[in-house]
Length: 123
Image 1 (cartoon, helix red, strand yellow):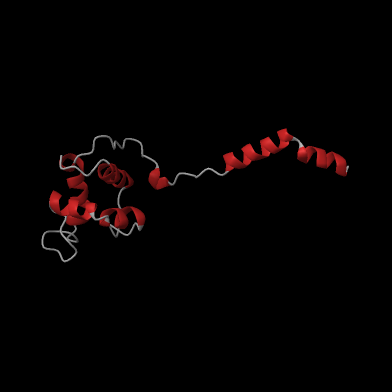
Image 2 (cartoon, rainbow, N blue to C red):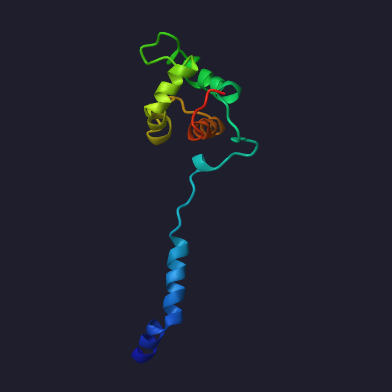
């Protein structure tokens, strides 16, 4: 019996099947925040057409990042772009996920991420 088990373990086909099974089972599962919701278009994001309203609804409109705020103002492209360029938006919204405090709609979050990844242009 031990000889049969040893022969099976040494078989290249068994080893190959085991390795393939191990490799396939170790893939990273996507998180719900990475999945694009139905009807959410993140192609060709623009500051004026998409991002300005997202920031207004989630950041500056709430008073947290309004004009003159001690937390920093996000009421203009230049002010927001400074925070994008220094990595603060990425860190607070995507890495630490602390901003905005009440959370952000997943589609809006993905639109913001797409805009930043495309260079955060003033378009």
